[in-house]
Image (cartoon, rainbow, N blue to C red; front, side, top):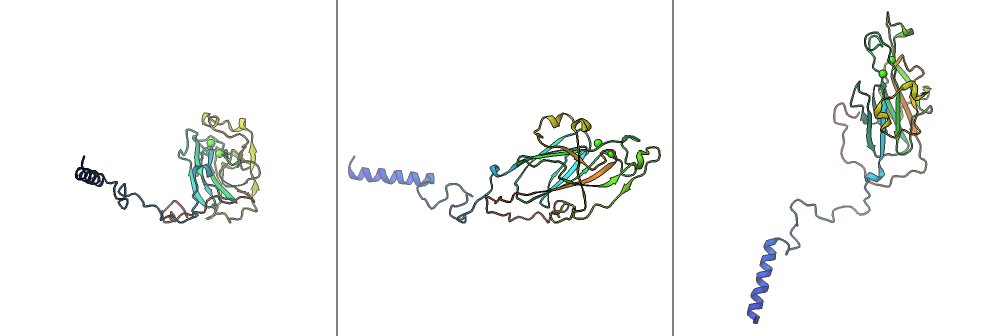
Length: 243
Ligand SMILES: [Ca+2]
Ligand SMILES: [Ca+2]
């Protein structure tokens, strides 16, 4: 090949490369791809290795807030009994607030007509947090009073507006009562999850206290977030989701 032929060949290769889209580094290789270099230096993001798995089982239903934010709702109101597992990005100190309900008619406190049902709640986080008697517990719906199913009456107390808040004062509340597993008799899903070290809790009346709030605060004095990013989004504008 003479010089002229060589120049023609090089020009042809260049034109083909341009058409293929990878000869000009200024062109994005993929449309819509975020160009590099616009992330602040020193940005550290949380990853799944920073999260902990949380597992909860309620007889019969619960809603859970962590650090004032709604993080889990039992997806099944009544039966079958189920375990709810979610991934949490923990930050300490960590306030956990659970509102749990037994299956009980609000007017009578009974279920299946004139039956008295029992409650129960258990929780384990992969960071070692478990339910036990260090938790606080308070009843907001009790009945049927004196186990009188023939003439059932209930006693109620309004649930405080900010029962889930980190700064809510539960100092006057009693400690939770622990219950042995054979008193609760959990169903099969319980045994398919890791609740080792956790204890069933409720108020001191597993049968008649039908709506309870359970709270605790987990301290980790030496804990520091590995990440330095904060959410830019706000979900406080979603009605019914977060206060
Ligand atoms: Ca009950
Ligand atoms: Ca029940």
